[in-house]
Structures are given as structure tokens and as C-alpha cells.
Length: 203
Image (cartoon, rainbow, N blue to C red; front, top):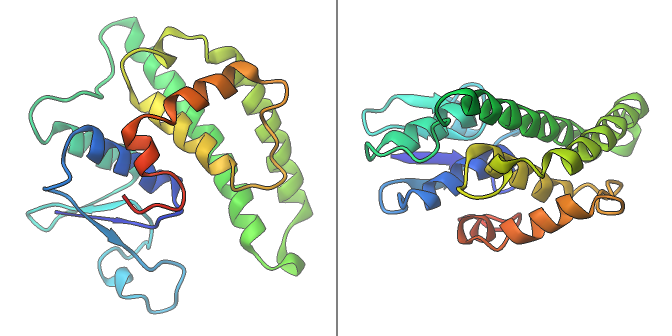
């Protein structure tokens, strides 16, 4: 099967991390897609042009990182990233949603900065800077949660990919005043799957 990605996409990185964590390198081919390009051949594969996009062995495509990761996780019949049982399931989902919310804001901010300076919206930039400040402060508190340590889960992966993408936003200086989040990020970044998929890598 083929997993279409762009090297700079934090959403595609989440799926790439799962591929490595599940040991699926021999089964899943990583393909770099051409996006945001008129008449890209990729659009005939995935009309939305989004990544990640997993083309299964039966030819059916799966879009969106959460769906893609769940499918990859269940391929071997031994899922590692399903939510835990009981009330902890809601906590896991809550934390994953918070991490994805922060990532979404970073992605909007980064996308706006890639536009020509004359086309950038000061309103959007100001809004996303404010959202980032609030979300980083929130995670400085949440990072003490038991689900943010121990066995790797999708909330941790999503948060790590969000913070990795944050490094590409020049005006986002999140480390001052957030030592616990910084320590957590430095610790998780040495994990093989995250080091191998860090911005600037393809695997």
C-alpha cells in the first residue's frame, strides 16, 4: 500500500510515526505528493489534494490522519493506539483533541506566512499568535497528565508533531515560561520514529 505525504506536513508526519512504531516500513510505501500545484497528478489519486492519504492494497483510499492511523494500527490485529478502557478513554480523546486543536492553529499560521507578504492577513496572524499563546500555556499545565508520559499514544504523537511544526514559525517563541513542555518535547523527540520523521526528513 502507499502512503502519500508531503515532507513538511505535520499531519502526514503523524501517520509516518505510526508506520514506524508499528514496524510497517516493508508494507507501506511512502510517496511524496505534489500538492498546491495546478494539474498535479496527485489530484487524480486524491481529488482533495490533502495529505496524508493511504491507498490500501484493495485500491481504496483513506484520508485524514486519525482515520489513516487507526487503519494502520489495526493492520496486524494488535492495535497499540486504541483509547484505553473506561473513563481514561475520554481523557485520551480529550488530550488528542487539544493537541490537534493546537496543531490546526499552527498550520493556519504557517500557511498564512507562506503567502506573499502583500497577501498575508494581519488579522489571521494576530489571531493565531494569540491562540498559540493560550494553547502553549494550557499544555504547560496538561503535560503533567499521566497520559502524557508512559506508553506512547496518539495524543503524545500529535502533540510532538505540533511542537515540531512550531519550530518552523519564526515568531513563535514558546519555550520561555514553559519549561515542563520543553522538557517533555526534548525527551520525546529522541524516540526513533520522531527523530526519523523530523521536519526536513522523508521517513
